[in-house]
Image (cartoon, rainbow, N blue to C red; front, side):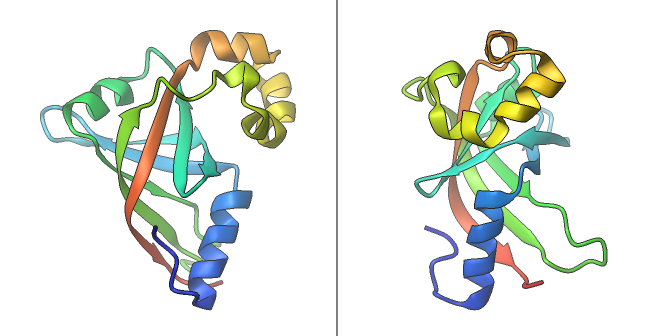
Length: 141
């Protein structure tokens, strides 16, 4: 697992991965062009879970090249950086969005506010992508 040295930076990075609601996921197109997308995510058992829109190009990108990077926004002054490199895969064993209690606890209000209902979101964001981290970088606040 990344961020397991016991350092203050690692502890802070893990806290941010658990608390932050928005991240940027960078995938690479089949022809080699990096593409970054804002995503909602869940840090779960040392992996990152993203429910992807079934129409999103990132799904094909991951199928062609599973190496990805997820990063959190900085503090606005170029500090408090958290970057996670990893290998992504579609994980059909993940409970669907409608029955994923931890994801709903984190995003339930946003789902209702932005998409109307959990059912509406689940009809579109139904590709569970898991990212297994291979490297993490962080700077403290």
